[in-house]
Image (cartoon, rainbow, N blue to C red):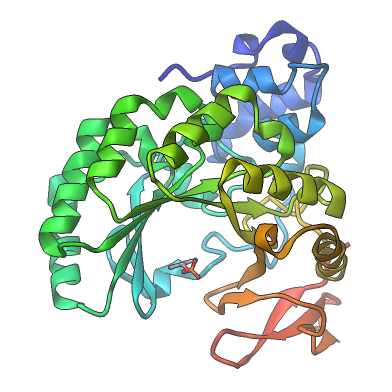
Length: 354
Ligand SMILES: *Cc1c(COP(=O)(O)O)cnc(C)c1O
């Protein structure tokens, strides 16, 4: 897959919008070890299909604001390391495991919460790396589902994906596969007839699509989702609440309504994680709850995803609703925190941001 990795590769009308400060920042990414710049021609074109769409541009074009790292931002915001049971395998919740099958993506979302890992550009999982994972699955029959994520697992060829599916099913026949991907949005042509046949052959298999804005539902994207859904592959979605992209009840309602009409099920709306250099994307939690309330009033229950946050440092995924904030406290450094409860009921903090 051909990716655009330099400003000069971008469509001219988009390249023309890049400031000197942005150029300098893009050129400094490698030396600073920050998530690289890469985007598919398809997604870059989407950013300038009908004039510049800031909601699309903002998601893939690096911003000098990423240089601002807050003291409470974490390399491992979800605390996955404490639940790692084998390299690339995370077992946090009773009956499902998370597998980091591949470290690269077709385009790097600037809000990526796993950016510390994706910036290392690990390749597709090897047969050797799969062995301890197979052993773990064999000895943990309580695990009924594997979330195949990354990076984007669909960066792997159909052949590599099939080897992975064979290995997982050899360890545990019939185990549910949940594929996490942004590929239908970034490169809809990747959802080929061959890939759809492969998915069909390894059911039960579901796709969870990362999608954030109604403009991402371009004609080719709709066609790709149609190929999956009409072939009997259930498609669910997850969306990240992003300042300057989709932080409005109306925009989210439009997105979820369109998805519902296409036959995809909105599953999660996520509050921003505390990944390094992503504060310009996060929405203040109280405002986020207000937006979600607004959304609730605008859309059918069928199209309403669960609003959730992964509490920083391993507090787990917690569903959010008005009343979830139990209080506030300010620490010695002057930072104010919202008080919530972790998944297991312990008091847990999430920063109060602007
Ligand atoms: C989100 C997540 C899951 C899946 O949780 P669901 O609530 O089933 O969507 C599993 N493992 C990890 C580590 C996760 O972060």
